[in-house]
Length: 311
Length: 97
Length: 102
Image 1 (tube, each protein chain N blue to C red):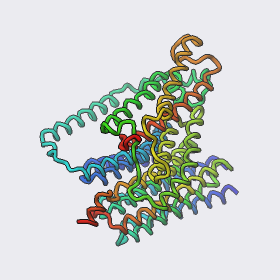
Image 2: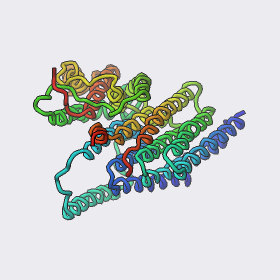
Image 3: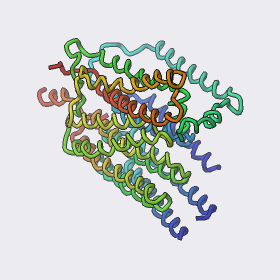
Image 4: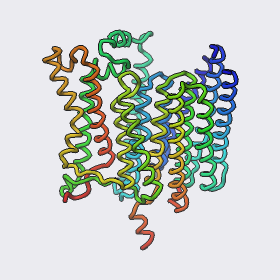
C-alpha cells in the first residue's frame, strides 16, 4: 500500500516538474520534447488510475502524431520571418490569470464532489450483457452514448477542412507534401519494416475493443502514424485532396454510424438503438469503418494543407 | 521450481535496471554526443532486453511471452534506426542551442 | 506459485519500475543542458524506453494485460516520435542553400 502511494506521489511530482519545465523553456524544440515526455508520463498516470483505455489513447496520439505536428509547427516558426511584436506584459499577465482561474475552478469542482462521488458505473456494468460487449468503456462509447461518438467522428472533418482552407487558391484540390528533409537508408528501412507491424497492432486495438481496452481512435492513431511514416520516407506520395476515394474514406465512419442509427429508428424504435442480438456485429462493423476514417483524417491533419498544384 | 524462476526474474530485472542506471549516468557525464549515444544504446537494448527476459517466467505462455518479446524486438529495431539518424544529426552539427 | 511469494515478486517489480522511471527522469536533465539537439533527442529516447520498461514491470506486477498493450503501442511509436525529432532538428533546405551560397 505504502509502495503504491510512493509510486503515485513520485509520478505526480514528475508530471508537475515536466509540465512546469515545458511552459518555462524558451526554445520551442526543447518545449516539444518536454511535451512528448509529459504525454508519456500522463499515459503512466492513466495506467495508475486504472484507465487503460485512456492510457492507450494518450500513448497512441501523444507520443506519435502530436509530437510531429508540434515539431513541424516549431520548425516553420523558426524559419518564418516574424514581424509581429511579442505580446505585451498586460496580455501575458491576463493569459496567466485566466489559466490559473480555470485550473483553480477545475480543482474546486473535483474537491467539492460529494464522497463517494456520484457514479453511473454500476448501472453501466449491469446492462453490459445486453450489448454483447465485455468492455464497459466500449459499451458507453458505442451504446449508451453513441450520439457523442457520432459527433466526435464528425468533428474531425471540420478540423480537416480548417487545415485545408489554408491552401492557396491555385493549390486547392492538390496534394499536401510531407517529406523528411533528408530521407536516407535508415529511414527507408524503418518505413518498410514498421508499417506491416503497425497495421496488425492498429487492427488488433480496434478489434479487441469489444472485450478489452482499445478502440477505433487508438487503432486509427496507430494506422495514421504508419501512413505518415511512409510519407516521411518518401515511399508514397500523399493523394490529392480532390480524389473521390479519399473523400469517401474520410466520411465512411460517420456515414456508417449514421446509417445504422437511422435504421435503428425502424428496427429498434430509437435513433442509434441496435436491434436485439445484432448489437455486437453492428458495433464491430461501425468501429471498422470508424478506424479507417479516423486514420485517414489524422494523417491528413498532420500532412497539412495541399501545396502541390493539381495536374 | 517457482522459487528458482522468481530468483531468475529478480536477477535479470535487476541487471536490466542497472543498465538503465548506467545509461543515465553516461548520458549525463560523457563528454560529447557520440559517446553519449553509445551509453544510451546500452540502456535501450540491454536494459529493456534483460527486463523482458526477466519478466518472461511471470507471464502466460506462449501468447503473453510472445507479446513481450515482440515489444523488445520493436524497441530494438527502433533504437537501431534512430541511433543512425541521431548520430548523423550530431555529426552534421545542427545548430547549437 | 503461492500467494505470499506472488506478492513479494510483485512488490519487487513495482520497486524496480519506480527505480527505472526515476533514472530516466534524471536523464531528462540532458534536455536542459543540451547543448545540441541530438542530446535532447537522446534524453527523450531514453525516457521512452524507460517508460516502456516501467509499464511492462507495472503490468506484470499488477497482472493487468492492458498495460502491456500500452507498452506495445509506445514501442511501435517510439521510433516515429524520434524520426519526428530528427526532422524537427534538421536544418530545412533553405538553410543548407544559404550555407553553401552565402
